Amino acid sequence: SMKSKAKGYLDEFESSSDSLSSSSKSGGSGADGVPSSLAANTDITMADLKSLKVVANHGRSSSYNRKEWSDSRFAAYGSKSCWSVRDEVIKRQADPGTLKISPDGCSVEAVSFTDPYSGKKISEDNKKDVAKNIQIDHMVPVSYMNSNGGSSWDSAMKAEYYNDMDMGHLIAVSSEENSIKSDSGPSGYLPPAGGKYSLAYAQDWVSVIRKYESKGVNATIEQSDYDAIMKIFDENNVR
Image 1 (spheres, rainbow, N blue to C red):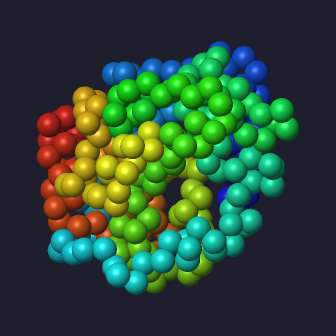
Image 2 (image 1 turned 90 degrees about the vertical axis):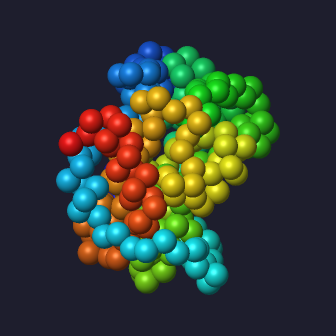
């Protein structure tokens, strides 16, 4: 169940949060300089991309209401603990040894990690700055998904999407970079850090859309974004 899955993540991070010595659990560099916590979907292939349902480019829906996603039956998908999905995502990207947990044990008070999008180091030493300068990005923006099939999903599926803790779905990034990305697809925004992370980013995009399409709901990608990912796959010899 989603509940036990979220709880599983929580237990995993709580057990490693004391020492934070394990780079594979929390931040740390993986292959090619991509943090291991962000290289989750390296098995995505060209065939996976080609399996997506491609539609003509279109704008975002004027009827999009984020509250339909963020408010819908959250309790069914969050863990029962006092941790929010937001804090869990920040925690799993923390550089080893930098995480400071609040006295009540429920949230992040201080943390350092590399913003995967900009490539710049984020170091916040108090709760106010953590709240102000770190945002959680949906790899495939909620309004993008809403305009590409998601508006027809039921509230339970929207809640699952909004709070999905699968690696590569929710990413902690700088507030500034998240604002620049907004609700763009890969044709309108790619992480300026570039390098191998561009490939991880593209593979995450394919993984998210494939996952929800496999659940039997409508989930599509626009032509220009499909083409942008195809270009990245070609450049990186992804077959």
